[in-house]
Image (tube, rainbow, N blue to C red):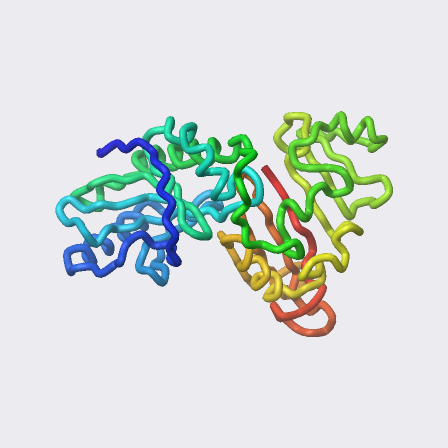
Length: 320
């Protein structure tokens, strides 16, 4: 396996794929073998519009990109793509922290106009060489780099490249929620007069003035807030964003696609309490924060089963 030192390349391009994907027959056959190999490992790989393989595991989307420049051995990259944020992970700040990122080995961080890729590169002769042991090592190395990125200091000279406007649903626009952020100590809530309740395996509190509309949880047992449920927008967001809490599933998908890379949008029909309901979910990832939107689109408002129905969003969950 070829080992590489991470380097940062600033590439201003319009596509997420690093290859032209003009494959010869041998490369096409190899890509098919990779899909078969991934399926044998229990994954559900698919091809995107660029011809790259992708699959989801542990709620993270991975890509396996095959170079159209090499055969026998073949050159592949196992990677994840992330969208730029608004603080530590702007393109300018990543460039400003080049030296600290260079200290990590095993994968490369590659930067594009609107997103960045963290990927592990390898030459292999057979698809069977991409086994679970190797993938697990790549998952670990990729996550190590992502963890390093989200802990970067914000440079004074770094200018945000984020395209999201002030009226979009971004982390910076949403937080703090009535003074609280993910990572805040539970002692802050206690000092503010909130009642922190201890269950058998976790602690939580609801805002005394807002009831169960906002739940703050310590599921990781670290005595800080690592999970937040929002059942309606806080007052400071009402009418201030280009999306409302009561917007339909399809409207939320369209809005979020302009800001983040959606890692999952799922719709399924379920039996619940003797009735058939349509459940939908959207998941995005922003640095080390996961955001999940949960919808019940079944027969609310007498509109039948529709992803265009208003007021079907049940809650938004934020977690670390």
